[in-house]
Image (cartoon, rainbow, N blue to C red; front, side):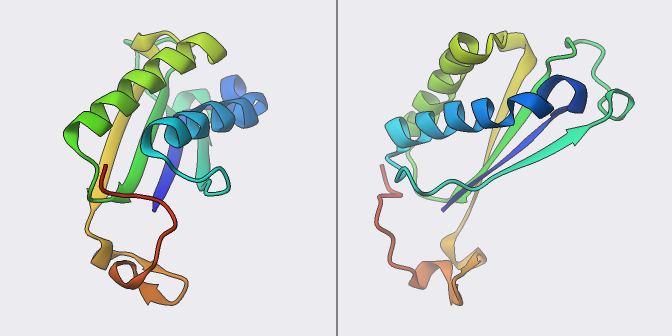
Length: 128
């Protein structure tokens, strides 16, 4: 299971949500082998005065990836590198304006479709 939260300025990113989602999901499909139809993205877009980060431009974007424990350090590094490269190419987002955090938790900490996460049968790998 993987969920993504995006934080950024509403005036910059609200019209580009689909483009951001497609770019990031493409990275997850290619690198972490998520199925095309497994997309859980939330946009938490803020007014300019609610996102204080004077060292960054108005295009500053924070991406939180919440997922099951299981991906190797190399799989996480590869995803991060791929995200920086593709968001630069497709969104024109400078590396200085993107921050990514991967937050992992045990499957037992998730409840999905009426079951604890460790009792789910997934159709894609988590241990890569």
